[in-house]
Image (cartoon, rainbow, N blue to C red):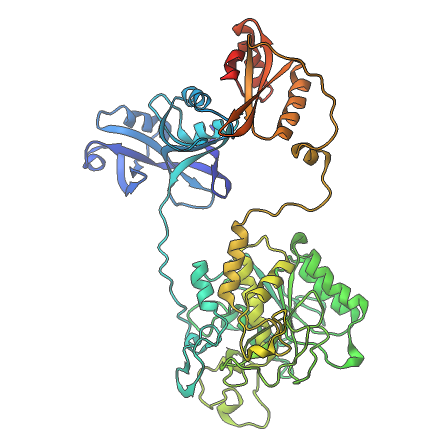
Length: 628
């Protein structure tokens, strides 16, 4: 027996599967679960008006045992409990069904539908929206709702379900250095040093986590293309997938060379895990794709981005580039980046972030200037422009980094610190050693992966967004900082781009776009689309129909284009005359479609069976009643 059933929900169809041990009961006795020998224990005392109980294991099926319980005088109602795939959370149908009829369906026709499925009308919300409830003579409410979805007068039938809800008590990370990460949420001070910061001068990442109710999706892949990535660092434990080294052309990523340590802190800012130690990245749940070996060469450029396409990487962070005019990008290299942005993620596009550079120039890195990437500059803990961050018209956003007080990030085990500096000052600006596996960090190298992590949160909120849409969201939701006169009529500044990145606003916009109705296509309409809009050229043969005889009504429509489509389909299927009744209802024109025009009601009933066999539902209709 198939235990799975498809039902409508607010977000589309969901598949429910019967529990093999839980049932829902409404009983007359409070101690029923304790007294009845068939019950193991009460799982939940209240869910949708039922008690959720676990049955004792027996040789017979749960269906049989539930039927036995239903026959007991103390049991008023018994129901199966359901789960969605991969979840143990109990789901129970309350017995009510929210039904939306097609526009133009009158109350008489609606009651015919309820009678056919043996439902009671509980409440009428509008002329075509009602709430009905199953009766003792009805089938399972999930089966009833699924069957009604196929009925021609019914637009949708959604069974009311009850499910335990989650408590959203947000737990902040317990990682040791989390309170030092002012760029995620700036409290206005450094916790262990006498330094005043500007409260709120941060990327609003903590607010984004709270809005999501989590730390982002573990389905999102973030690639860091860089050198010197410490794969053994605790902040990356359990997160690494699909690693690759361009220099060795293998998965053997270069480690241990003191000349290369940059990739480790960059990666940590984006995706360091929430594991109780060290720091936390902007997207701590994201998967980490380390790609080692930066290169200006065409082949390497193409390979690194093709690798991201092949591995279905969602976001790429590149904290490197070139501002030397002799090493601008040629067309083929630009195309390699564009290909990832347009073809990655199965056609939705991989989001690519590039740092603008730290030379303090009035133009940005040629990689960051690529029109398809997100060009990231740096601002400070005082919400000011970081003096080193390159400026330019191609700059998209800035993100908090050093320039006043540095970022705390992971450091590779072979990192020897700043040259010519002794003691802990080589890793920590104030000389105060907070961890042997971390250090102070900054530059646009830190700002870029911060934005990349935020992009991962945006895609966690709405994975259907294209790379172009993610970039637009990041720019559109940024906060304007600095002097308002810095910004032009477009809201853009050469120093700040469109402003300081705001993770919370970006996530909120992604969620809004997820729930917004789809935009109407602007492409040239197909023939079917033209018909649906009542356009096109059609051959008619029209004759008046006397108000007598019987047929099978299969629907009522408010749009004339839909009438044309249905009439053509029905004529091809049944080779019978089609009767269309035109009436006014509440000031709107309504078209009712009837197949056939028989003198005998029995002939119409036979047609109804034939239509049912062909997947078309309907009901026998006296044609004269169409005039009512």
